[in-house]
Length: 112
Image 1 (cartoon, helix red, strand yellow):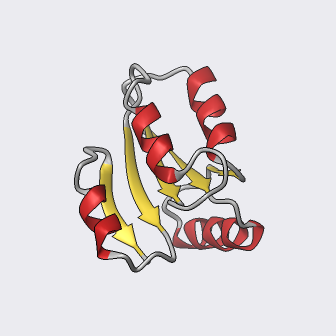
Image 2 (cartoon, helix red, strand yellow):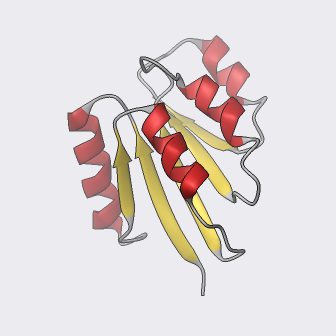
């Protein structure tokens, strides 16, 4: 049986709370982990044990202090065994961000 974990990565506490509530309300999965920074989410993933049935859905903010969403995407490419799909969730309406997102295989959608 597959195990789906949603990782919610955003530097805004209110956004983290709302996204967690929305994910749980849909019944999509019960396991939602909130991270206030890209660094903390990377630490979590780097210490995780992956199995073929584990799948991570990552709701990722682009503009964060420290490790940006783009930096996070660059770094997760090198985490061996990680099965992840990323939805960029941002307030950016810059079309260049949408175009840049197409360069990342793990990005499945872009929400603003």
